[in-house]
Length: 440
Ligand code: CAO
Image (cartoon, rainbow, N blue to C red; front, top):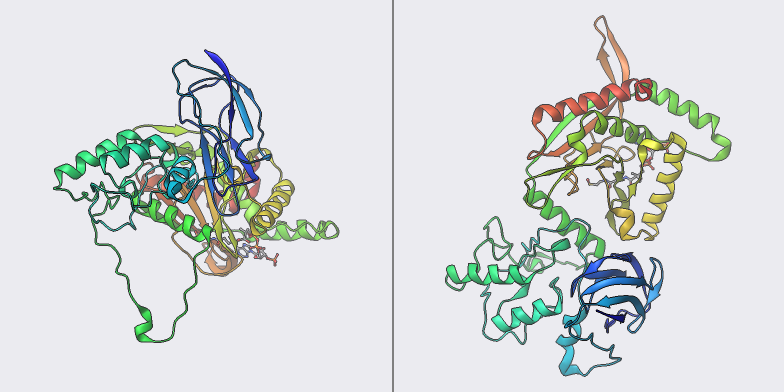
């Protein structure tokens, strides 16, 4: 073992970028190419891998600090016979372009993305003798895996990753090659990431029918699109509809808003819904779980963090409000205001959007009667809220006007049975119908 300082390698166009996650701590044993930190520029985020194996002795970076190539990251007690780390090189020639990108380009998919669906890629020949003109820069893999893939002639763009956050491992490349070989040189549906085995979408020239303009999708649109598509394809969804009588809740909420008018604090129905969801998660713990990567175990959580979908000009983001069980209605209102402002000002960090137990998508301020939200994996359920409206409800003797809140609960049917889906929304309706029950 020998003590060695580890510096940020050449990270191409990433200069003076913010550290959003430190993935190791003092005492951790790290292997060559384990991810050490995540950095984010205004365009993308990436993980910086370790150039050595050993034990972390000192951390020289913190979340929120800014770094560039050559910054000191950590001190490691290095295992002998680890190859020496590459010195950070300030510039490289044009001919070395791929070496630069392959050493640093790890576009980080959204949290939890681990299944590596690449459904948009067309199933052309996947194993080629000469891949020198093929761009691997968007593939999520370490330099040694890129090299390995090039040596074997495997097109990394078509390999689905099984590693952390969907990173492509050497085993994935081997499995891909094996799969392609047994399918006569063409990737099978699984190898191409096209797990449905359906034909790719046609490329259509719409200008043949009239005037058009092309607008590029925002980065958030693209990431959300891939994430939603993956979840839609992999998760067998069922949506349970229900409604809650919030007439009394609404009267109480209005009273609170009047009492707090001077402070400027505004309480919306959403914070009560968050509290009712936590009560539901406690009563039905399976809703507060995630399937492990192999789909063989359920991981049950004893914390209560709720994701809230926020509509921003750049697209949908889902920040997470932590420990909802421990916070008051006023605290939650304040936090909801802060986090939605942060989302709309593009100030959310990846960590702000991680660790949720169940997400709520509220369209109640906009309209609609019901919808089918897509589960925000690795969570197993998402609650959609539509606009409450006054309805004539039969009380056994007569129709009375009651304010009814539509609930649309989508869940992962691998984890949750239909009966539990209905029990959960019935429970939510009971809690929201009489919020005194939230105290019991
Ligand atoms: N029924 C009737 N009125 C409702 C309501 C409901 N279910 N929910 C909110 N309202 C009212 C609020 O009380 C508020 O009224 P006042 O201005 O008269 O007080 C008004 O609608 C606007 O509320 P809001 O939307 O600003 O606040 P919120 O706390 O309900 O929601 C937030 C905050 C961030 C979730 C919301 O602004 C947002 O971005 N929603 C969109 C989420 C989205 O796009 N989801 C789709 C994702 S696809 O699954």
